[in-house]
Image (cartoon, rainbow, N blue to C red):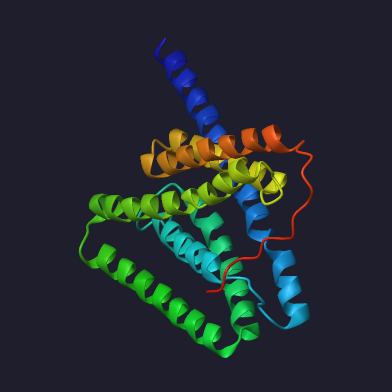
Length: 240
Protein backbone atom coordinates (compact mmCIF):
# COMPACT_ATOMS: atom_id res chain seq x y z
CA UNK A 1 0.00 0.00 0.00
CA UNK A 2 2.85 2.35 0.89
CA UNK A 3 4.56 1.52 -2.38
CA UNK A 4 1.39 2.38 -4.31
CA UNK A 5 1.12 5.71 -2.50
CA UNK A 6 4.78 6.48 -3.18
CA UNK A 7 4.30 5.58 -6.82
CA UNK A 8 1.24 7.84 -7.07
CA UNK A 9 3.10 10.70 -5.38
CA UNK A 10 6.00 10.17 -7.78
CA UNK A 11 3.71 10.29 -10.80
CA UNK A 12 1.97 13.44 -9.55
CA UNK A 13 5.34 15.08 -8.94
CA UNK A 14 6.42 14.15 -12.45
CA UNK A 15 3.26 15.63 -14.01
CA UNK A 16 3.66 18.73 -11.83
CA UNK A 17 7.26 19.17 -12.99
CA UNK A 18 6.31 18.73 -16.64
CA UNK A 19 3.52 21.31 -16.38
CA UNK A 20 5.85 23.73 -14.61
CA UNK A 21 8.53 23.31 -17.27
CA UNK A 22 5.99 23.67 -20.08
CA UNK A 23 4.66 26.92 -18.58
CA UNK A 24 8.19 28.30 -18.31
CA UNK A 25 9.06 27.34 -21.89
CA UNK A 26 5.84 28.91 -23.17
CA UNK A 27 6.68 32.10 -21.27
CA UNK A 28 10.12 32.16 -22.88
CA UNK A 29 8.65 31.76 -26.37
CA UNK A 30 6.03 34.48 -25.96
CA UNK A 31 8.63 36.78 -24.40
CA UNK A 32 10.82 36.25 -27.46
CA UNK A 33 8.00 37.64 -29.62
CA UNK A 34 8.05 40.78 -27.48
CA UNK A 35 11.83 41.04 -27.67
CA UNK A 36 11.87 41.00 -31.49
CA UNK A 37 8.90 43.37 -31.88
CA UNK A 38 11.07 46.57 -32.01
CA UNK A 39 13.09 45.24 -34.97
CA UNK A 40 11.09 47.22 -37.60
CA UNK A 41 11.74 50.42 -35.62
CA UNK A 42 15.49 49.79 -35.58
CA UNK A 43 15.54 48.84 -39.25
CA UNK A 44 14.09 52.29 -39.90
CA UNK A 45 16.69 53.91 -37.63
CA UNK A 46 19.54 52.10 -39.39
CA UNK A 47 18.22 52.98 -42.86
CA UNK A 48 17.75 56.65 -42.02
CA UNK A 49 20.85 56.78 -39.79
CA UNK A 50 18.78 58.83 -37.36
CA UNK A 51 16.70 58.10 -34.27
CA UNK A 52 14.18 60.70 -35.48
CA UNK A 53 11.58 61.24 -32.74
CA UNK A 54 11.91 57.78 -31.25
CA UNK A 55 12.78 57.48 -27.57
CA UNK A 56 15.46 55.23 -26.15
CA UNK A 57 13.96 55.26 -22.66
CA UNK A 58 11.73 52.17 -23.10
CA UNK A 59 14.83 50.09 -23.90
CA UNK A 60 16.67 51.44 -20.86
CA UNK A 61 13.70 50.51 -18.66
CA UNK A 62 13.47 47.09 -20.30
CA UNK A 63 17.19 46.48 -19.78
CA UNK A 64 17.16 47.23 -16.04
CA UNK A 65 14.04 45.06 -15.69
CA UNK A 66 15.70 42.14 -17.49
CA UNK A 67 18.91 42.48 -15.46
CA UNK A 68 17.09 42.51 -12.11
CA UNK A 69 14.89 39.57 -13.09
CA UNK A 70 17.76 37.49 -14.51
CA UNK A 71 19.65 38.04 -11.23
CA UNK A 72 16.56 36.86 -9.34
CA UNK A 73 16.52 33.74 -11.52
CA UNK A 74 20.14 32.76 -10.84
CA UNK A 75 20.73 29.71 -8.60
CA UNK A 76 22.68 31.84 -6.12
CA UNK A 77 19.50 33.84 -5.46
CA UNK A 78 16.57 31.56 -6.34
CA UNK A 79 17.38 27.88 -7.01
CA UNK A 80 15.06 25.99 -9.33
CA UNK A 81 13.72 28.76 -11.59
CA UNK A 82 16.34 28.74 -14.33
CA UNK A 83 13.75 29.58 -17.01
CA UNK A 84 13.38 33.02 -15.43
CA UNK A 85 17.14 33.45 -15.86
CA UNK A 86 17.13 32.30 -19.49
CA UNK A 87 14.29 34.52 -20.69
CA UNK A 88 15.70 37.62 -19.05
CA UNK A 89 19.23 36.90 -20.26
CA UNK A 90 17.94 36.79 -23.84
CA UNK A 91 15.91 39.94 -23.20
CA UNK A 92 18.94 41.78 -21.80
CA UNK A 93 20.98 40.93 -24.92
CA UNK A 94 18.21 42.25 -27.19
CA UNK A 95 17.91 45.48 -25.20
CA UNK A 96 21.67 46.02 -25.28
CA UNK A 97 21.68 45.60 -29.05
CA UNK A 98 18.79 48.05 -29.45
CA UNK A 99 20.43 50.60 -27.14
CA UNK A 100 23.74 50.28 -29.00
CA UNK A 101 22.06 50.90 -32.35
CA UNK A 102 20.18 53.85 -30.85
CA UNK A 103 23.38 55.41 -29.46
CA UNK A 104 25.27 54.95 -32.73
CA UNK A 105 22.57 56.71 -34.74
CA UNK A 106 21.49 59.36 -32.22
CA UNK A 107 22.47 63.01 -32.34
CA UNK A 108 25.16 64.11 -29.90
CA UNK A 109 22.90 65.29 -27.05
CA UNK A 110 20.75 62.14 -27.13
CA UNK A 111 23.84 59.98 -27.54
CA UNK A 112 25.42 61.39 -24.37
CA UNK A 113 22.19 61.09 -22.43
CA UNK A 114 21.70 57.46 -23.45
CA UNK A 115 25.31 56.61 -22.60
CA UNK A 116 24.83 58.18 -19.18
CA UNK A 117 21.63 56.23 -18.59
CA UNK A 118 23.27 52.99 -19.73
CA UNK A 119 26.17 53.49 -17.32
CA UNK A 120 23.63 54.28 -14.62
CA UNK A 121 21.83 50.99 -15.29
CA UNK A 122 25.08 49.02 -14.98
CA UNK A 123 25.96 50.88 -11.77
CA UNK A 124 22.56 50.14 -10.21
CA UNK A 125 22.75 46.49 -11.26
CA UNK A 126 26.26 46.14 -9.83
CA UNK A 127 25.06 47.70 -6.55
CA UNK A 128 22.12 45.26 -6.40
CA UNK A 129 24.46 42.31 -6.89
CA UNK A 130 26.92 43.55 -4.27
CA UNK A 131 24.22 44.32 -1.69
CA UNK A 132 22.39 41.03 -2.21
CA UNK A 133 25.58 38.97 -1.91
CA UNK A 134 27.35 40.73 0.94
CA UNK A 135 24.43 41.86 3.08
CA UNK A 136 21.94 39.00 2.70
CA UNK A 137 22.10 35.26 3.28
CA UNK A 138 20.25 32.96 0.79
CA UNK A 139 16.68 33.07 2.22
CA UNK A 140 16.72 36.84 2.77
CA UNK A 141 18.63 37.36 -0.47
CA UNK A 142 15.78 35.89 -2.51
CA UNK A 143 13.28 38.11 -0.68
CA UNK A 144 15.36 41.25 -1.24
CA UNK A 145 15.90 40.66 -4.96
CA UNK A 146 12.35 39.32 -5.31
CA UNK A 147 10.81 42.58 -4.10
CA UNK A 148 13.01 44.53 -6.50
CA UNK A 149 11.93 42.29 -9.38
CA UNK A 150 8.25 42.72 -8.46
CA UNK A 151 8.60 46.52 -8.43
CA UNK A 152 10.42 46.38 -11.77
CA UNK A 153 7.88 44.05 -13.39
CA UNK A 154 4.84 45.96 -12.14
CA UNK A 155 6.39 49.18 -13.47
CA UNK A 156 6.87 47.49 -16.83
CA UNK A 157 3.34 46.09 -16.92
CA UNK A 158 1.93 49.50 -15.94
CA UNK A 159 3.29 51.06 -19.14
CA UNK A 160 0.35 49.79 -21.27
CA UNK A 161 -1.97 51.96 -19.15
CA UNK A 162 -1.01 54.89 -21.39
CA UNK A 163 -2.03 52.92 -24.49
CA UNK A 164 -5.24 51.73 -22.83
CA UNK A 165 -6.13 55.32 -21.99
CA UNK A 166 -5.31 56.38 -25.57
CA UNK A 167 -7.51 53.65 -27.05
CA UNK A 168 -10.45 54.67 -24.85
CA UNK A 169 -10.03 58.36 -25.72
CA UNK A 170 -9.61 57.87 -29.47
CA UNK A 171 -11.90 54.82 -29.72
CA UNK A 172 -9.28 53.36 -32.05
CA UNK A 173 -6.83 50.47 -31.71
CA UNK A 174 -4.44 51.98 -34.24
CA UNK A 175 -1.74 52.39 -31.59
CA UNK A 176 -2.27 48.99 -29.94
CA UNK A 177 -1.13 46.12 -32.22
CA UNK A 178 -3.20 43.00 -31.64
CA UNK A 179 -0.40 40.43 -31.81
CA UNK A 180 1.79 42.43 -29.44
CA UNK A 181 -1.07 42.65 -26.92
CA UNK A 182 -1.79 38.93 -27.37
CA UNK A 183 1.88 37.97 -26.87
CA UNK A 184 2.06 40.12 -23.73
CA UNK A 185 -1.07 38.46 -22.35
CA UNK A 186 0.12 34.92 -23.15
CA UNK A 187 3.58 35.58 -21.70
CA UNK A 188 2.05 36.93 -18.49
CA UNK A 189 -0.33 33.96 -18.17
CA UNK A 190 2.51 31.50 -18.80
CA UNK A 191 4.78 33.01 -16.15
CA UNK A 192 1.85 33.40 -13.76
CA UNK A 193 1.31 29.64 -14.08
CA UNK A 194 5.06 29.03 -13.76
CA UNK A 195 5.14 31.09 -10.56
CA UNK A 196 2.14 29.20 -9.18
CA UNK A 197 3.75 25.84 -9.95
CA UNK A 198 6.97 27.01 -8.28
CA UNK A 199 5.01 28.51 -5.37
CA UNK A 200 6.84 31.78 -5.99
CA UNK A 201 4.72 34.92 -5.45
CA UNK A 202 7.55 37.11 -6.77
CA UNK A 203 6.83 35.57 -10.18
CA UNK A 204 3.09 34.88 -10.00
CA UNK A 205 1.88 38.20 -8.53
CA UNK A 206 3.38 40.67 -11.06
CA UNK A 207 2.59 38.38 -13.98
CA UNK A 208 -0.96 37.97 -12.70
CA UNK A 209 -1.28 41.77 -12.84
CA UNK A 210 0.23 41.68 -16.34
CA UNK A 211 -2.33 39.07 -17.40
CA UNK A 212 -5.21 41.25 -16.14
CA UNK A 213 -3.88 44.25 -18.07
CA UNK A 214 -3.47 41.99 -21.10
CA UNK A 215 -7.14 40.95 -20.87
CA UNK A 216 -8.15 44.60 -20.72
CA UNK A 217 -6.12 45.35 -23.85
CA UNK A 218 -7.66 42.44 -25.75
CA UNK A 219 -11.18 43.39 -24.70
CA UNK A 220 -10.57 46.97 -25.84
CA UNK A 221 -9.12 45.70 -29.11
CA UNK A 222 -12.25 43.70 -29.95
CA UNK A 223 -14.42 46.56 -28.71
CA UNK A 224 -12.86 49.19 -30.96
CA UNK A 225 -11.28 47.16 -33.80
CA UNK A 226 -14.30 47.74 -36.02
CA UNK A 227 -14.13 51.49 -35.57
CA UNK A 228 -14.81 53.28 -38.83
CA UNK A 229 -12.73 56.32 -37.98
CA UNK A 230 -10.22 57.49 -40.52
CA UNK A 231 -6.67 56.24 -39.91
CA UNK A 232 -4.39 58.68 -38.13
CA UNK A 233 -0.77 59.56 -38.71
CA UNK A 234 1.65 57.19 -36.98
CA UNK A 235 2.38 58.02 -33.35
CA UNK A 236 6.09 58.47 -32.71
CA UNK A 237 7.71 58.27 -29.33
CA UNK A 238 8.74 61.51 -27.70
CA UNK A 239 12.29 62.75 -27.52
CA UNK A 240 14.46 61.35 -24.77
